[in-house]
View 1 (cartoon, rainbow, N blue to C red):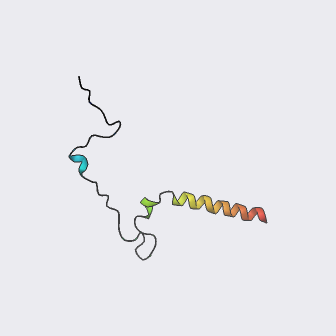
View 2: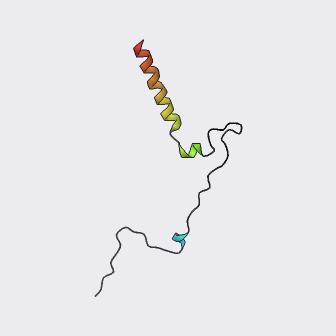
View 3: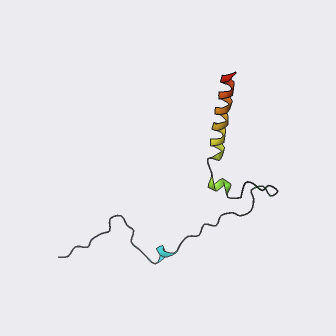
Length: 67
């Protein structure tokens, strides 16, 4: 008796799997009159506000320790 060999965790190819999903990103600007940031900035860098806040707090703390 011949056993079917599986390909591990590889998904089985189907006709619907061949279609690629196209993700349409917003174009233009987040603020209409500003050249920065681009409209996709929020989706591309979701942690930016948190990282900026931590960075600024670290700088402020470092400055106050030096005084």
